[in-house]
Amino acid sequence: MEIQNFDYVIIGAGPAGLASAQYAARSGLKVIVLDAAGAGGQVMQITELENYPGVFPAVNGTDFMLNMQKQAESFGAKVVQVQVSSIDKQQNNFVIKTRDTEYHSPYLCIATGAVHRNLGVPGEKELTGRGVSYCAVCDGPFFRNKKIVVIGGGDSACSEAIYLSTISSDVTIIHRRDTFRAQKAVVDKMFSCGVKPVYDTVVKSINGSMKVEGLTLENVKTGETSELSCDAVFIFTGMIPQTALVEMLPKDEAGYIKTNEEMETMIPGLFATGDVRSKSFRQIVTAVSDGAIAANTVKDKIENK
View 1 (tube, one colour):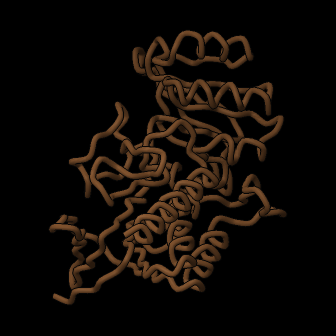
View 2 (cartoon, one colour):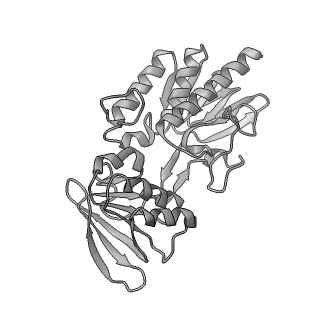
View 3 (tube, one colour):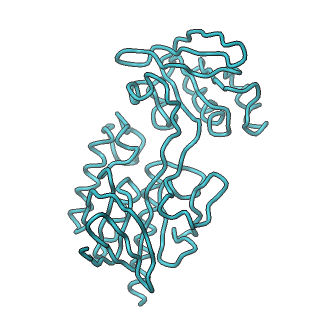
């Protein structure tokens, strides 16, 4: 098996990983980014990215991520589409194994992100980006004064419903139970904002041809089905942080990796950035910030050696 040595290896080519690669490579470090799917991450699902500071008019997520990759590569970073099979630490080096190559480095960053917990119903995948969304801040403004439905019952779903109520006066939240799991204060505020609850109900399908037009619902207690027209569906049934390669690391209650303010985990030299990291706010801009901080920390550690 071929062995390649780098100053800094990053697993994950989303905004956090590519930003970290750019900052590290621009500092003169030998950097490689590994990702089974190539550059992109969740951003590739965004049709119009309009809330990233300095990017105006809005661009689509694919163009944004391809530009991030080109920018990182222009400073010397290498981006490789490959599946990482395992991570180990041998003395002062991390050993990152793929099918044909071992990458050795004293510093490693996990930027593998998180994936949305899907409903898994017909129409969800087909209409993602055309009315189906998993980010109210990203896509809510496109549905101003439209009929909006939120799916979920936890803090995230109720908080996003509150935000969406500032965009539209017609917001409905659908929950499969008869009470919300969110904190009472959050639920009370949501109701005070005029959000309409539908209890004991699940989505059976998301309907529409070129865009979301409505939902087929089922009452879990009676089995009765019904139709609900809407223009947008925001799904907040949880996120799944992608931590399979580093299950040994301490995590918060939701499964996100704990780090310090320099993005370093409990294992010296091992960093976590972006949506896989435990934090209060997950956006492209915060992921990029995480990546830049991790790269700067690595640079400082190498210089201090």
